[in-house]
Amino acid sequence: MKLLLGVIGGLNLHLTCGEAFTLQTKGLPHWSRRNSSREELIDMMRRPTKLVSRKVDSVRVIKINGRLDPGDGPDRLAEMVQQFMGGDDNELEFLLDLRGVTYISSTGVGSLIKNYRSVLKQKGHFKLLSPSQSVMNILAISKLDGVFEIFTDETTALSSFAPKPA
Image (cartoon, rainbow, N blue to C red; front, side):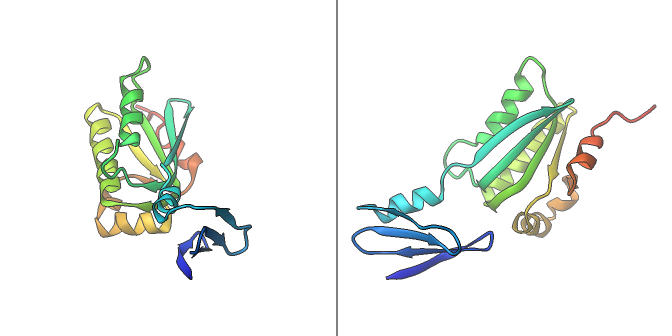
C-alpha cells in the first residue's frame, strides 16, 4: 500500500507499508528502515523543532526550523527567550526568524504571544522575520499580524531596533 502523507515545501511525501516502511520524497532519494512501526515514522516526521540563536549587535536573532508546536511538552522557544532575558546581558531585543517554520499550532501561536508579552513587559521588543505563507495566514486570521512587527528583510528588521535619535 502506498499512501501520500502530504506535501512539504513542494515535496510529495509517500509512505509505502509492508514488512518495512519506505518514506519517499519526489525528486530526492528514498529513506528506508526495517521493522519500523507507524508510530516511529510519525515521531520521525515530528522531530523536535530546531532553534538556533545568534547575536547581531544588541539583537538576539532566533531561527526556528520545523514545526512550532510545543504541544504537551516543554516550550523550548519560551525557555530560550527566558534564558536570554535572565542572563548576564539581560537581553530584551528579539527577532524571531520564521522562514523555516513548516507548521504552527494553536499552542505555537500561544507561545509567540506569551513571549511577546513577556519581553514587552520588560520594555523590550519581540519582532518576526519572514513568516512562511502558512504561518502568515494563521497570523492574519487571528489578527496578530497587527500586533507583531513583521519584516520580510533581515537588514530592515535589524535596523528597526536601532535607537531613535532624540
